[in-house]
Amino acid sequence: MPRVALAFSADRDESLKSERLAARATPRQKAAIQRAADIAGRSITDFIIDSALKAAEKTLRDYQILELTEREAEAFFDAIENPPGLDEGMHEAAKWHRENVEVRW
Image 1 (cartoon, rainbow, N blue to C red):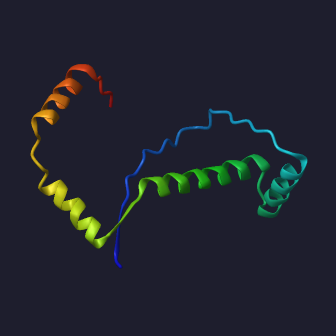
Image 2 (image 1 turned 120 degrees about the vertical axis):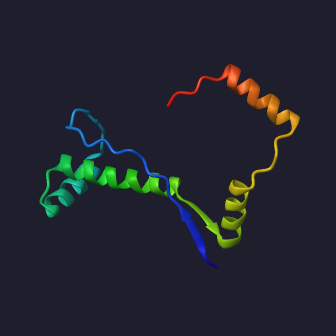
Image 3 (image 1 turned 60 degrees about the horizontal axis):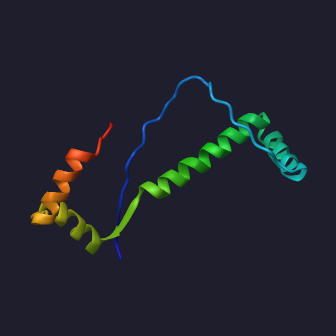
């Protein structure tokens, strides 16, 4: 069955390194990481940051992608293109939200 993926991108901050990360590891964990870093020809810090960043980006990508079947995609886009009308309760909720919730962008 065909699937449709919708991806939402996040801003990337490419500024200079200024943040510090700290972690505790067992001797076995550190030795394995150090060995892998050595094999890759990288410092342990660069290896850890690169590995953590790749894992973080994958997690974010997995979280940000909405996979839909063809039928689900049609229903999704139909709902966007033809939204249902608001009943009185929805109008009241929208009014309450405008008056009571501060939205920051």
